[in-house]
Length: 91
Image 1 (tube, rainbow, N blue to C red):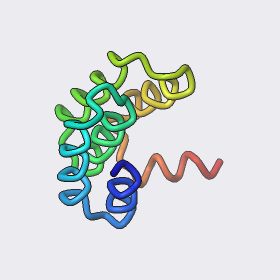
Image 2 (image 1 turned 90 degrees about the horizontal axis):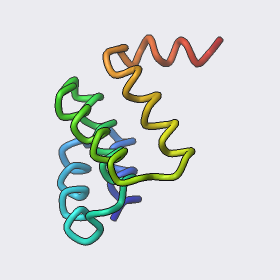
Image 3 (image 1 turned 30 degrees about the vertical axis):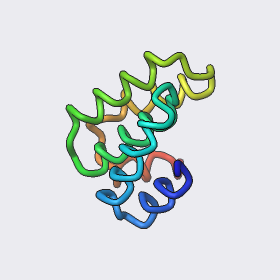
Image 4 (image 1 turned 180 degrees about the horizontal axis):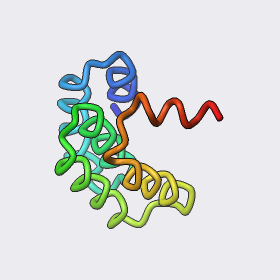
């Protein structure tokens, strides 16, 4: 289900991805990657308060050190538009 949501998000079907992730939360409520992806989707939709809420929940679930670093980086870049974020990666 997570992979399906990830594919939907990559196709910019954010509503569909969120529906799948909400269902997935019922089966795996302790999976931090679900909340992290939801945070990423809310960021893309410019709903920053929900993005922060889900990133925070992901961190509360004690993800791996690599995932913690990724989530914290996403939080730090929360108000950076995606276009600018992509430009920074090029340098």
